[in-house]
Each structure stands twice: as C-alpha cells, then as structure tokens.
Length: 129
Image (cartoon, rainbow, N blue to C red; front, side, top):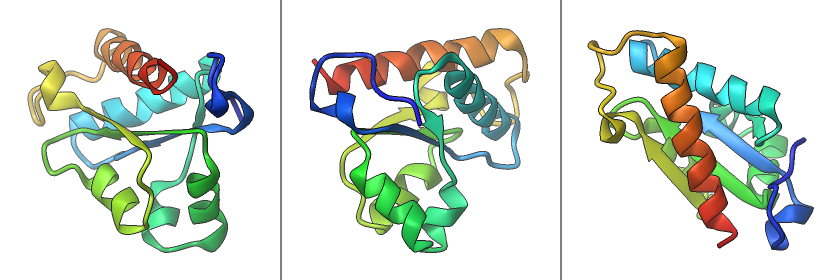
C-alpha cells in the first residue's frame, strides 16, 4: 500500500482512495482517477463495496489508514456517506461536480481524469499541513 508523501503521522499508515465508481460518466472518471493515483503512488485504491458490505478486514484497513480520500462523482456523495456509515471519520472528500464535472455531461478523457487526480492529490496534501 502507498503512503502519504509528506512528513507527518500519516506517513506511517497507508493512504486509501475510495472512488464512487458509479454507473455515470463522472463515476467512471472518479474510478479512473483513483486507479491513476494508485499507479502514481499517491495512495492505494480500496474497495468501497467492501466497506458498504461491512467486510471486516476492509473496514479495519480504512480505520487504520493515515489518510482516506473519498471521490464522489455527483452530489449524492455515496462514497463519503458509505465511509461515514461504517464509522470512518478522517475523510478527505472530493466531489466532481464541485470541479465543474457534471453527471451526464462530462466526457471520460485524460484531461478530466487529470483534473480529478490534481485535486485529489491536493486534498491528500492538506491532511499533513
């Protein structure tokens, strides 16, 4: 698992990224951004369905994470709410509609994925400021 690249307590625990991965264009953008951030070493994409299903190991991993990023494709905030319902509280949250990427109107392309990656990295850097 990847770790936060800053010098703080979160450097000793993994950084987990939970995208909504919903059925819309913005869900796909959130998913692909999380995968890119994992490949880039920013953190490790984790299974949001496992959190929702109360899979003990996945929930425990989220609780132990140094940083948790929820990426939501729309204002329904399913990723953030799923984590909160499981008792996860240290959540950085990124909503694509706040970045101008609107459900049903956002092309799934490298440019839009790059926007989400940029702001996702910034949100995780704030954890350690």
